[in-house]
Image (cartoon, rainbow, N blue to C red; front, top):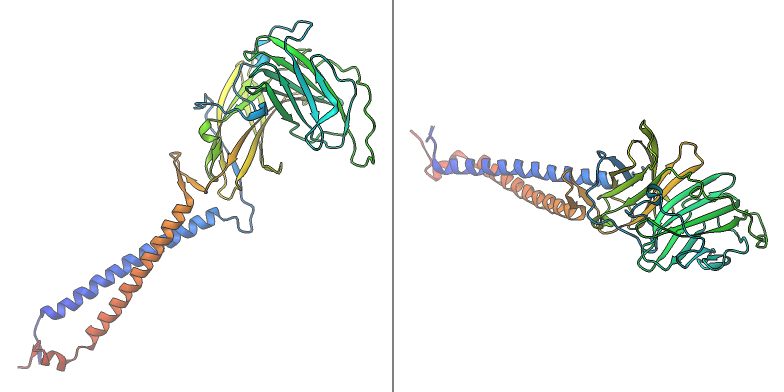
Length: 408
């Protein structure tokens, strides 16, 4: 018996078998690739049992940040870019305040404490005692976008300074960034025009923080003779402010937060000075989600640079605040700035080019591809198995009956 060589029907089965085997391998590989990418993204974005880094700080080259329109939060509670009174040394005020103003200490319910109010016409007459150790203040001056220097002094000789700007109605708010110790505290408020060229007025608020063990807080007492502020003593050496571009005021989880930071050093020494910046990002519950330090060299009266804060994919939506501290070398004083931003929307994957990709959409596309390639691979597997059975089931009698082979 001799089999007729290369009959076209037999070769057709083999070609179809080879084609489906090849497609099976390709679809299986694509399914594995889709599964691997899906698993990698899941592991990268999943918190699991370990603690995920919600924010990381990325250091950029010193230089002007590409900030097209700095943001300004309502109430003047956050810093923006404006001429610093520390740097310009504005003209001292006249004996009579040039503008009417009001400054108030808020109680636990957010209402003005009756003994914690000072105006241009009526200074504070009693020192209130409060139980909460992280007080808030609010005020108003009859000038839009006025610039204020706030000094929050605590015993024995430590202070925090912040330069803020009022809103379009002249209103502002400020909250102590850290809990205050039990004892006597003073808030100095010095007001300037929007160009920081003229001092418009100044006032002080004194208050005491009572210990938590006190059953009833002491009654308000007459004010004590306060020491002069550091601004009056020309002891303010640094100022720091932060601003966020409008396009970054609301970002997605996983997106970069761009911040422009301005440092003022009005009396630069002949040699460059090292300073330390402390960054804190807090959520609405006042929980710290980032705390990191950075050391810089300052040699110019004014220095501007940019910082990128990379957010985590699992960051909860809500409002956040960035706090920046610049401690003085002696440790008694620190310049302070804060600015708010919001996390909202689906998580995104930020590429090196800065482009953000929707992670939810990526998961959906990869899941769809994995399903499609899996179904194709299953179909091709069935085709290969069927063709294999057909090829191997052909007998000599089948071939003789079909005339595909001949006996000689």
